[in-house]
Image (cartoon, rainbow, N blue to C red):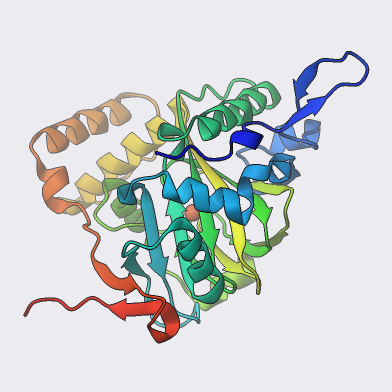
Length: 330
Ligand SMILES: [Fe+2]
């Protein structure tokens, strides 16, 4: 297996004063205002990760070539946020890393390499660096689990309106994108919708109305900028007319875990015909939901009701649009 990015495992700077090698700080702007806003409001900060040379075309191709297919999720999508949702999964179809990068440039796809730190030590150390700094800058967070994903996406690609389960950050490395972040409450985030996402009944789809945009915070993201937003806040992304490279992190804290348990339990109550009354993430009502959730998952119902991905296209450079529908047996 080829190991990528030997020349740039970390972004290291040579300190002329001391003659020693020191890692460049991840954040280049994280002041007391940012500390107060972290996790409580959408926040854009400056970073240095985009300066690492592992994210060149050649570096990205080597990364892809070193990974098994099951870590690489490839999707395509429609052109209109207001049109039908046509988010569809694609098979890599044996394309090399370089051919896949070329498909990104020519086509309309979004590559998401999830939990890449499990496969590549370069990303494991980057993830540690990122959260070391986050925990210093935002003390008391208590992150006990984290992961990083690599996103490589086509010019004008988009991610539809959705909500994520754990805490999230998004770091722009190449290209530009516009991110819409919506309030983390009704009507933008319906309780039943986020409960279904958390229970894995649906993937990340939640109800969207075009007028929601009037209430979104719209932020353009350039290389060297990152975003963080409140837990479960709905968001969507439009790439500008250029290939985009980003990383995204997910993290879990005790507070996020309690929110997960509350939402999961409320989703089960709703499934059984009750309207949940409480969103407390402490006290007896939470522990009752934790017990209900554990019983449900132990019974195997979680797996029986879980959303399953379906592959719709093979990537094919010989096909116009690069996507060849997968024929399904009738
Ligand atoms: Fe997201």
